[in-house]
Length: 115
Length: 110
Image (cartoon, rainbow over all chains, first blue to last red; front, top):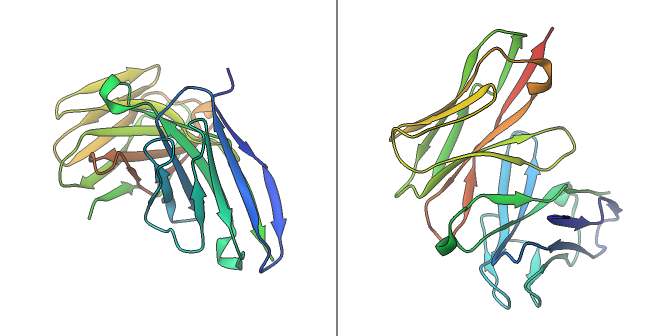
């Protein structure tokens, strides 16, 4: 029972490089989210998706893009990494609210350092 | 704009010393308030959901309560293994997003 799996767990990028973070969930959840967590700032929403083929901007979307081509996967892309994007990134998923049990399940995080 | 404020930022307790963590919120319409526990280097782990004022939930040494403006996480006779950061989040139904507070870092010593 894997839940939410993030790949990779750690990564160091040089300024200007690009990368994609992968999130996979095996719970058949409709909703998926990408958050970043910085000291003293809490969890801030970057982008989210309410279903396959849909995406929307969250609180801090600049510098990131996302795609949800398959229901179980949610990809977060950095086209040109900047030191300000050094953070810990968390993916989460939730069941469709109409069916109850609305807690979000989180992955283990990806620690990204941009030098 | 939805706001969630947690206090204190950090709390140090001795084993067996009970206390409470606070989560105050300002939202347009609350659909649920969530408590999570986060250990260092790990993702948040779900603890409780509260939906309406007056509701209470309990799990081992933890008890969560909800009023119209705030929620409390009461920790009774804590143990060192309760040391973690406790996060509060609200769901206002706006595109099913969860808005988080900055957390309370709890340390329980022997």
